[in-house]
Length: 259
Length: 379
Image 1 (cartoon, helix red, strand yellow):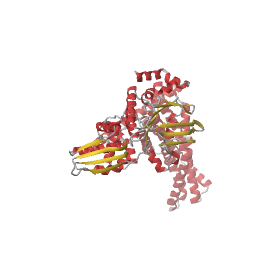
Image 2 (tube, rainbow over the protein chains, first blue to last red):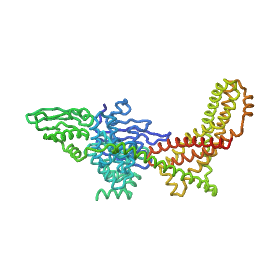
Image 3 (cartoon, rainbow over the protein chains, first blue to last red):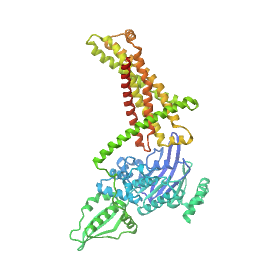
Image 4 (cartoon, each protein chain N blue to C red):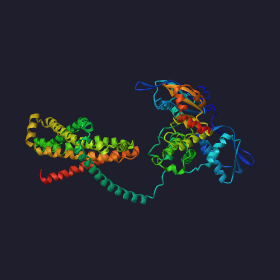
C-alpha cells in the first residue's frame, strides 16, 4: 500500500472526454484528510464530471486516481467493493430508490456490505435517520411523499449508512430554500467534525462555501485553476474568480457569515 | 491516518467488583460486524458494574458507538452500572448524539388487516374502473373536439408531426409486420393442407388462406404489433413529457397538448394502420402461396388463378374497414394512458404496460363486435 501522508484523494493527470470533446484535461488535485473541499466553477466546467470520474461512474482517458492510498486501477473486484464501502455519494436529486421507503433505502448498503443481524441494521438505520435530522415518521415514507429538503437528507442518510470516510456531495443545497440550505450546511459541518469525514462537495451555493468548506477549488479551462481557503479566493486576481466571490451574492454571503 | 490504525479489538478482564472491557483500535462498522454476537450475549456474572475502558481507542464511528451504547442500555436496564472510562471528548460527542436519537422507526408503512385490505382493494378497484371509463370517454370526446377544431382551423393542425408519426409507426413497422404476416400465411396454408388433403380438397387451401388472412388475421396481427410497438411508445413519450412538466409548460405557453400531442398521433395511426394492414394482406397471401407450392405443388399461376375465383372483394373490405377503428382505439388508449402518468418513473412503466394490454384487449373486443355486425348484415 502506498504511503498516504494525509491525502485522501489524489488525482493526477486526469483527462476525460465525451465524444472526442475533452471536458477535463491533465487535471491535478489533492484532497486532504478530514477536510471539506468545495468545488466551484462555471456551469459546464466539469465539476460533476470530476466527481463522477473519481467515484468511477465515468471513464477517463488518462490519469491516476488514488483514494485512501489505493490506486483505483490496481484493485480487483473484491478490493474495489471494499473501497466503495468506505465512501458515500449524495447525488443532486437524492437518487433515492423510488420503490423503497426511506428506511429501506438506508438499509440497502447495510445489507449489501455487512452481515449484521436485522435488528442491528434497523437500529443503525434509525440512527442515521436521526443523525441527518429527519423525523422518525419519515422512515416509512416513500421518496415521492417527501419534500425536496427531506429527500436530500434521506439521500445523505443513505450515503452515511456505512459510516464512510469520504462523502461525495453533488450540489447538496441546490433546490433547497435558504433556511433549509443553511440547516443542511450546519448539519454537514457538525457531522463532519464529529465523525472526521473527508467531504468532496460540488456546489454553487456561496453560503455553503463560506459556512462549510475548509478549502475551495475553482474549476475552469478544463483543470483546477486554483485551490485555497476562502481568504485566498477573495484575494485572487482571476477575472472569473473575482466576479464570482465579489459579486453581489458573494458579498451577501460574506456579510451573513461575518455579521 | 486511517489505514494505519489497527483493527478494533476487545479484551475482558474481571476485577473483584466489576467487569472491565478494554477496547482499542478502529471501532467501526467492520468491527461492529465481528463483535456484535459477543456483545449481544455479554453478561456480568457476579459483578454489579461494567467499566468500558477507551484508553487504547484510535477511532470510532456511529455503528461502533451504537453497539456499545446498545450494550450499556441493555445492562443498565438490568440494574447494572455501566461506566465509560477514558473516553476522548471528540468521541464522547458521538455518544451524546446517539443518546438523543430515537432508535426505533417503522421501516415500512403500517399494513392494514387483510380482511379490510381486501374489501378496500375491491372497492377501490371498482371505483377506479368506473372513473377510468368516464375519463376515457371524456378523453375521447376531447380528442374528437380537438380534431374538429383542427378541421375548422387548419392552422392548428400539425402536418410535420403527422408525417413524423407516420414514419415512426408506419414505415418503420413494415419489415416486422410483413414478416409476421408472411409466416402466418405459411402456417395457415400448411395446416390447411394437412386437413384438407384428407378430403382431397387441397385446392381449397387457397380459399382458406384468402378468407382467414384477409378477413381476420392480417389486420388483427397488424393491430397487435402496432399496439405493442407504437402504443407503448406513445404512452412512454407522453408520460415522460408529463413527468418532465413539459405538458404543463405547453399549457402555460398556450399550446394545447391535445392538439400538439394527441391529434397528430391519432391521425397518423389512422392513416398508416390500413396501409400496414394491406401490406400484411399481401404478405399473408404470398406466404400461403409459397407453402401451397411447396406442400401441394400448386404453381404460382394456379394459385393466383384460384385466388381470383375464390376472391370475394368483401373479404378484403371487411378486413381493411376495421383498420381505422383499431387505429383509433390504439391511439386513444395509449395517449390517455400517457396523460395519466404521475410523477414517478414507476408510474410510467405501469402505465406503459397497461396501455399495451388495454389496447390489445380493446382491439380484440372490437374485432368480435365487427364479426357479429358483419354476420348480422350478411357479408
